[in-house]
Image (cartoon, rainbow, N blue to C red; front, side, top):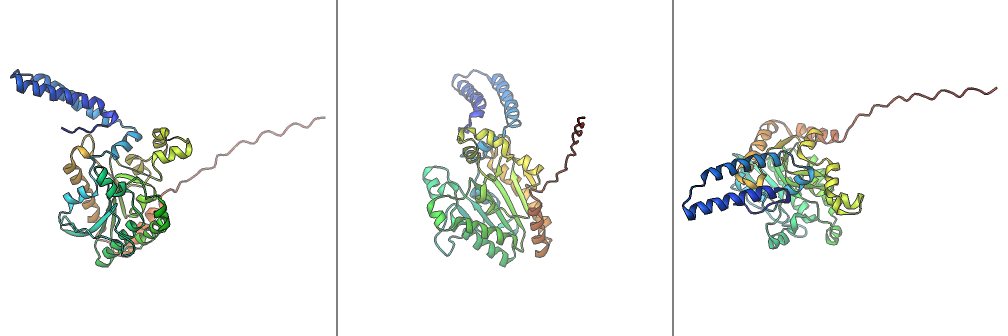
Length: 333
């Protein structure tokens, strides 16, 4: 049984514990309680559907950070079994928060790049908690250029709260590394599909996110800043993160509505962590559908479409409101 529950999942945990207790009681006492178990199971299914169909933006942010949620390497293991990781930026070091290398995806040669978090404290320290540093983006850039030379599609997987803001990162020019990636991704002659699988925070996310298509998992988010960071700036207190999440319009459905995301990838009931295999299949199907369209286009068309896609983001039309002028005051005699 899955044991990690978020606060809003507490009612589900209580029901699952009751079902487990009844199953154990039936096994040890020999008393048939199958009807009670069946009734509780039906109630659990209905409650699960109700809770996950009415999640707030903040609850979706929490779900996107679930410690058991599949990360880049979990998806790659299921979608690209022959993945060969390449390391190092050939300048400074190898950033473990970004992984990448060539692979085969459903019979097609591709280059895979993604951010990677850890499962426990030791692995999180090894992966720098999913916060990439400059050398990570430069490693990614090296692999992007290899994909361009080889003429193979580029698949990126994004799950990071943002680029690492530490002193060392600034000393090694993190902003410049991200900016160069943005420029170079616009110039790639191959199809680029960016998939947001968990957190898509700030420039750390967009440093891998300039794609012809942007896919986002149902319970992932994509935002200029994390809700906590926004709350700290606007309200001077991180406890206002739920309000910030509402204001940022960072959910998958909203991003699709705004034209930022091209498709929302549905997740298994209860989130991707409940069934990693099913989540990977759904994401794989979405990527494959986009590749079928993009791989038939030449490099100049791909670059032009990528440029136009991002130029269109954030464009709004404003209609001036005509205001009636006040009547002139009557002249006094």
